[in-house]
Image 1 (cartoon, rainbow, N blue to C red):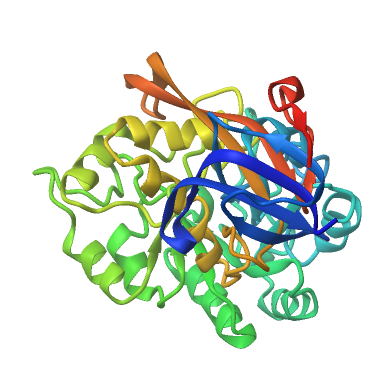
Image 2: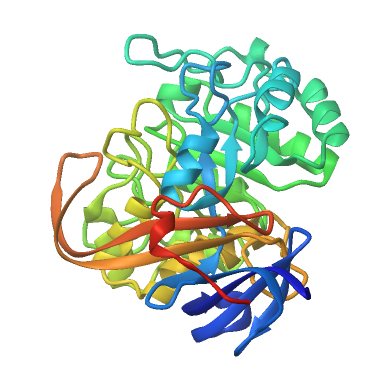
Length: 387
């Protein structure tokens, strides 16, 4: 046999190849081994006609240190139902508890997990419904030397440095934690992801410090620290930052995405670079829910399905500086997501409590992970056919 698995007859959306049309995709030894019409010669062939196949979805902002932090959810359970093949944990662990995250979660997970390492020694350690401790508020807890050492030694899993700034996460420290995290990122040659919440510091102060390739998450948050003006225009600092290569990530979460902001940004032609859920224990039951729900919100706000897929595949892979992620090119990682888009009336809610009745919903129907058919929700819908 030439291939291990072939997905036949689906509409394949792969922005890495500027492709949107019916195609077969094949996998062998954990990699994409074929992309074309009427592929043959596989140990297993699945008929996915009538469905949409994309590169494996990447959720660039998650919290999956299950059992290690109060925020953590189970990565495999989340990925099976939401179509995500790569969860990027953003700062749940710092250098002080990285070893536990790697040994007990990352190495045991079937789904792929990458991470931004927090410059805080213990990561995000005090975040629950009853306890809210900003880990960047006490400057003594920030550990740049230890962070640089752990990041440098674990490049297989660590893709960047994370820091949280804002009144809730860094108190009155302003941009001091961001400055320390940037020094670490420079030292190890990695990008940085910066969380922002209420001022101080301001949205503009944070953007002015970020470098090309750095990621601002919670980028479409509500007032205060919104990227849009009261008149519905995009703030000049936002436009300047994008021009020099700063990336804008959604990071929906429990408090960081507003329909009002998104409508203003999209009306000005400013789409997010990456759509991510920021899924954790406090938002998995709403308002974020999961990656495909977050993607659905943007579909209903007017983005095309192609562009929505692009933010969660090609763009996310490029943000990670791992182009083999988020692609179905031959030789890329053998990850794929099977989707449908249902039409109807669907109730979506943002973090401010605003509801949007959308006419479409993206649903995950199955996953190929590392070249194998992996825990599809409805296996009987995708019959095996003759090779």
